[in-house]
Length: 179
Image (cartoon, rainbow, N blue to C red):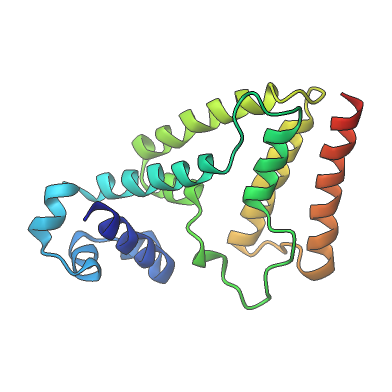
């Protein structure tokens, strides 16, 4: 039931953004009563927190453990965040629920959850065995890519996307070899 409700929240987010996530709309989208929804999630904030946690878990599931070779965590960060091929021009970035946007829209308490995860992720990036700053540069490039894409700020498309992604990947590989 919980996953069904969280799936409904994600669909509503894709369709209409955070404003579309209302308790009655989520219950209807999930095909449950509002009482059934409230049994699992007593508030909109609890729903948003649930989606944030689930998205964080999905992201972390593709990241390697602490014993991985140098640069592996940084490369996995890039691989999990920026596809090697350019998204199609018609693709709407809102079709993917970006955890940062969702957390920010959920208010300070929800954003705090994401900030704690980011601190942990940054510590792992810093300890990834690459020269200081390289992993942070990759994270900032990924964050910039998502921001540009979500806000329509001239995100690279086509060959420019592929080239940018390749350059970041080559930086990681080059620094792995020199470490």
